[in-house]
Image (cartoon, rainbow, N blue to C red; front, side, top):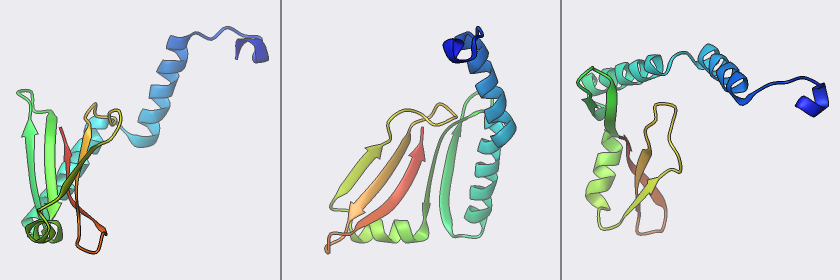
Length: 117
């Protein structure tokens, strides 16, 4: 950028601007976490989702697990094979995502559970 635009921009300036834009577009990370937890609590009350969370001493979300009733039923049928997939890197909450998947007898994949921890 310095060569193309003939100006000096350091890494910290770009990083600070990046986070300002991300927060403006998507809100604060805590707002996202609260929105997700609220949605999962509503689904849990309706009886359509299993959901549990782990909070730190200061009340921040540290981990969560959820599964739909269909996922739970599929797990009961096809629990002989599980694939654990933790995505590379971390999400915006600094938490890795773990996806539990199973494979049916016909070779198709079933998503059984998602966990952030």
